[in-house]
Image (cartoon, rainbow, N blue to C red; front, top):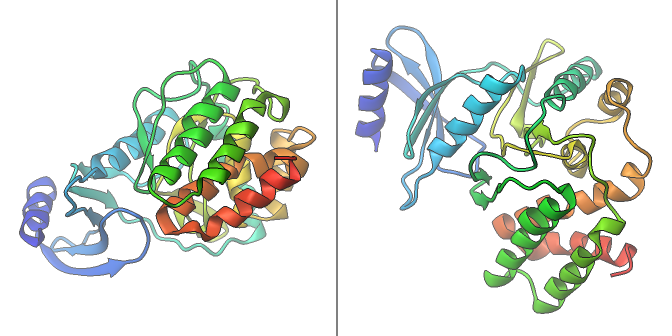
Length: 285
């Protein structure tokens, strides 16, 4: 793969690799910072698995670049095995000012309207398949393509016990009693946790590793609360720009976070299911 990476970069950028160093982050393949003979620096991802899908990440970054003002890395090369992007300077230390900037950027992203909930093609969240059939109803889309999809696969893979799947199915049948249809389907980054956002000098420099689709903006906000990506400075600013409807923090964010919890259970183990059980219990299921 080293030879393929060197050949790919040399052909695409007309410069040779003089140094590369591993970077952390990402669920798919290896990630490197690559220094080129012409002085440029790029980030390269390499997937040597039997089913490489880095082209999907490239597609999602290009989609955000084409359809929004959200800052994302420029995609230079996008193939199933290799993804090369420009190197964005930044870290995941967020000041109050950078959180306000993040709120402005995401409020603007969420203004972008989709024809329905979903996307023109299926995508990935981490390394997991994320189905996106165009669906008029948000309740139906979240129920079938997010909550039940991930729960059923967790059960099939032996991560989730049958009893918990049945509890999720009972709750899903009553989902319209708990969540609302949005004003319109919003374009979502889809995977905003701390290391997927880069900041520098009190500004957000880039959002990376997306899981793009159109849906209810509240699922984006809920994910931000799950791992405390941003705090009160972000939510105060966002609420000023796009008022958050009553009941979100009390109930709906926990419902929407069932999805990333199930994602994490499949990726990292069944310990995340205790939070799923806790949420279902509070809701009476």
